[in-house]
Amino acid sequence: MVIRDSARLRAELQTFPPYVPGRAPEEVPGLTPYRLSSNENHLDPLPAVLEALAQPGDLPTRYPDDAAVALRKRIGEVFGVSPDRTIVTAGASELLVALTQITSDNRTEAVYPWPSFEMYPQVTGLAGAKRHEVPLQADGRHDLAAMISAVTPATGIVFLCSPNNPTGPVLTQDELVGLLDAVPSHVLVVLDEAYWEFATDPQAARGIELLDEHPNLVLARTFSKAHGLAGLRVGYAIAHEDVIAGLLKAVIPFGVTQPSQRAAAVSLDHHDEVLARAREIAAVRDDFAAALRDQGWTVPQAQGNFVWLPLGDLSDAFELAASRQALAVRNLGAGVRISVGPDEALERVLELSRTFLAEHPRLQGEARPSKH
Image (cartoon, rainbow, N blue to C red):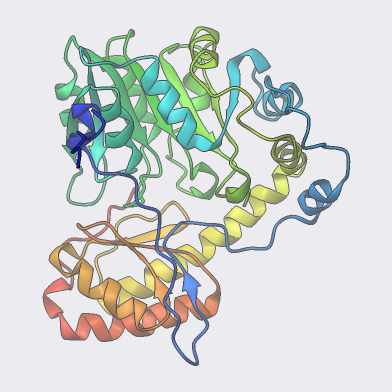
């Protein structure tokens, strides 16, 4: 028998873990299962979006519009930018890959907060960049002073996440301006705003106001969360024309289907309704976070469509307890992220959390949430 060697894969693959999607809930007799692990929008899709998806006319034999002209035009109209300063991608995930590809290789370095979105180490590691994971502060916020200190002459990209996934706090406008002023202008600064529509803090960073002054700033956004189009895979960026030109060379051709483009454009036609629904979810989130704090939990500022419980070494135990109640939550090692879902799901979480906290009293009140 001939023994063959395995295919030779890049050594960088051993330096970071794969992205692991949120788990599906366990089936438990007598209980409706709820997936609170993926930050999906639990509300029904907008009727106008469903109508758009039901329209005939998109033949599977034809490629979609590679330039996504209609959708980019609509993005520009809604947010007051030229379509030339936008790009549409297969979810924000493809956008993060492309941003790293146009800035990073094994001669460069990347800086990002941690814990934060799990794709940051994946995309920068795959590019071969040296990674600087900057620990969050105790209240779940970015340590911007430490992030600025981590920037070196070799830094190619800095990721920020506001609201931060998974912990919840936002960057303020002053914090964002301070970092942009401190970081060299040739370093690309990516502000990941996947959850921006849910943020209700009046001090939350407004990156779109800073694009003209800071051409190295990129806003990374998605239709997956507030728009409720996660299954259609549509993301977009707003950035300087030079950055967009670079991204157009890095994204997958024809990556966003025509039905997805049309649905996203229709959703933008109803942007006020999307924002109103995001505020409804935010109100539920605030009540949910307040109820957890009333029980004695430490909950950082919650500004996405989720809350974060910093459980540390008890994260596995909480995840297991949730699964026994037909609840899927996101266990990220340092803690558990719980997406906002239907009232019945959140009520079941609160019953579970009350019991769990009573069994583990050391979790109570170790740090208080930020007032920002």
